[in-house]
Length: 297
Image (cartoon, rainbow, N blue to C red):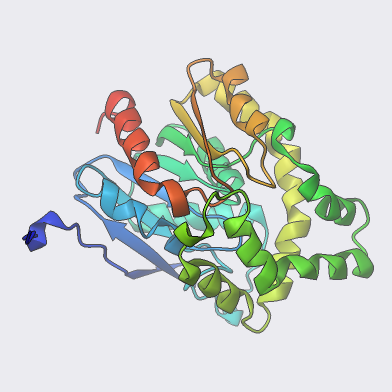
């Protein structure tokens, strides 16, 4: 049987750049800007590439935007920008990014590092955030696994030996492991995902950027009470879709959202940290249903 697909049936994903405070931000964009906007924020050690399958699945109903954060993907941070790699600065850059694109109201999809970045944005601009989708994006100590122990040791004692010990988290082997751990069939994970991440981590100087962010992640944990107060006070519509075999962020971190947002919707999927690699269609369906019920343009 021959299937004919018209060009208009396949959403076009654009790959532009925009200047934000001297930083050349790369991003992916698709969908009609007149539709509700969904801002996708990636985590470590990846980029907007992690959303490559999800974006076309949502672009017929939503305006979807996914930037590469500084230090990741194809965003370029020139030396002249004198950028300090901290989560506070990542969030401020995202603020500049949404302003540069003229985004006034948007839901946020937060994953891994995208969670503390996006939640800082929500604290600063609660009136702009219409809803939250958390995909293995943590805001509760309940969600931190023992996989964080070496990083927590570095927080307590930020000495050279503890910093050096974390370099094992930047190897190609560890990057691949993050993708395939907890997945029922490794053949479902596209090899270009972890291969691209490893290549970008290997750029000169990027290792030091990642080690700086490991250290600064302690500032996110310190902000958990502020994030939780925001959830309890603003009660944004929240959907948590988590890979339940995540070695870093445990299912109790997803369930904890209900303490502050009783109406939060929680779905635990039979996969690992990078749930979009194996469950993109299911997650897209849940997002479309959730935002369709909760968000008005």
